[in-house]
Image: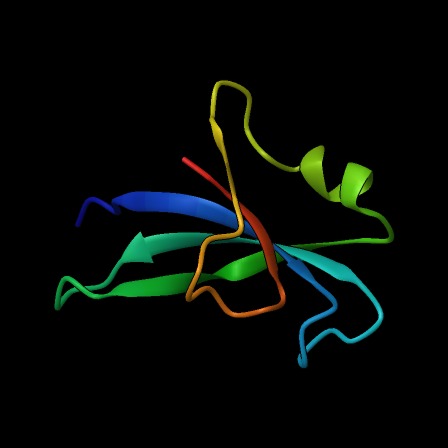
Length: 75
């Protein structure tokens, strides 16, 4: 099965990693719903977190309705 990745998101100290910034990749599940990839990257700063974002993606700042811990999304 081919995995389709939607985006990457940077989180500011989410509940599952309260001491870190977290970078997670999101993909489409078998049912077409977005799900987080099991792999994530931990960082001590926003600048360090951004180093885990692949080159060539575009930054989207936090949007109304986003979870408050989402700092930005990259597509």
